[in-house]
Length: 450
Image (cartoon, rainbow, N blue to C red; front, side, top):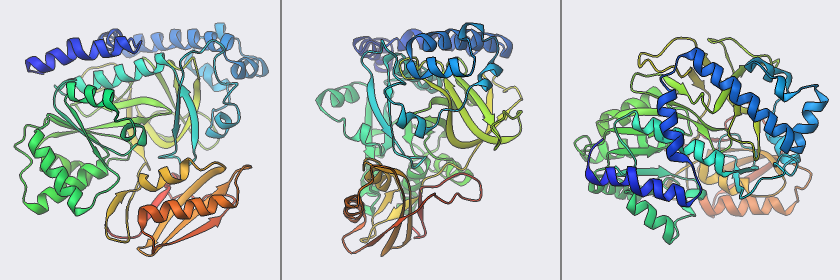
């Protein structure tokens, strides 16, 4: 970490920004930078204390969990081990959709509305409070500093979420300029766009990249094809998240940009779950998040066994995520990382990916461009998009109680707007979606070579 401006941004500008928003990010990051070196035993003891206090608060303030605890005979103040969570049923997207009002704490203030559907395919609306935001930002900030970069270092973000892309108002633009962050939209990956992305990266000479592994790998391959040198720009690290990182992508990104590649795992709903350190360990944010790996029967599995990742986020008292089913498959690691941090490790994250799709005119787009068309249409319980060819895209829809016939027209119009007016969009109403052989659902699948 170097540079007077980076120091100004890290120690003055960003802390001021967070304070004005009512966040406690700076204090939390400093605390996390101390606790990451605690022993595994001390971290577990801290987790249990936080879990008990969290559940006591939730029991008092959240109607849904007050009733659930009573039904299952759970007294929050008597929780004495992480294993006690196993007495509670899982939280699912359908439960959140059906109980949104009852899941809010009675004294919650200033909740921000979020929706997601990128990796699960099930549109979901939920709420996040200031405490949760502070903890997630602090965790991400800590992990960023592991790699010798910091807030204020020049950064290129390749992203596709409308939350980010729709928030580029004057205040956000000013903040990004002050913190030296430039956003490149990942939805459209045409030849012209890729040329401009390569040029903007070369012009900015960022110290870090952040984005989808598929997007960064595509930009890297395009730069290589164009003969554009990217490995002398001074890029230290590429942070990738939101999709499964494949070995080929890691190699391509690292080789072309001449930097380290750091994998991250988490989501808007589940929070910042884990991040890779320079020694290769995928560290769980244990100060805030309890991770369980469960089998098909719902029972917790030992480290080394693959199962669904279930998350309890201890900073979500305003809208609790307790034993939340992520739908992702993972494996816990029982080894200690060579970096000597006491934070527990994820050994593997399986089955998380989003394909690119190809429009009628040859434009390559991130699959999330189609997901965002569908996720905000009311009444869709779940969906899967399969691009069979340039001229045909199938959409399997599991309808909810409020699904209307005119929703089909909205889907067709929305996808044609992305893929081209001449593309046939075929809607198929189904009772359930077929999973991949891995057990993980993929909600955008393209059979067209990009």
